[in-house]
Image (cartoon, rainbow, N blue to C red; front, side, top):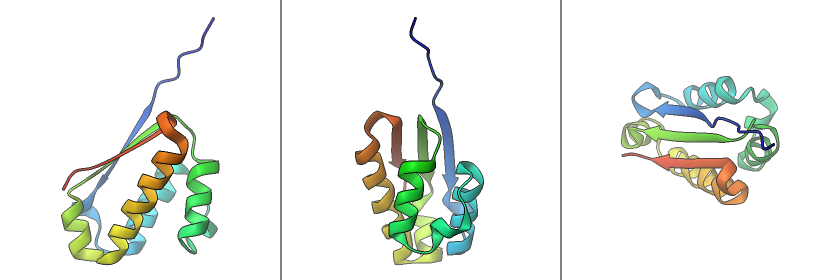
Length: 98
């Protein structure tokens, strides 16, 4: 008998992000990631790929507002999350809504 696992849905609301720390706090809370994973993009990728309970769907809404608040880091994070999506395939789904 196959076990069916419900996919957790996490929403990042760009309106709530005013700093890089705000974005990190959301990811840390939602995925129970240790602070050490936020040292750089490589360690964050590792934390997301190896330590996030899957399956999960991550949706970043009002992305343009978070980009206005935290600048190029928003684009770097978006690209990283797409890389995690590609790596984990159907176990991690990432979408962005401007």
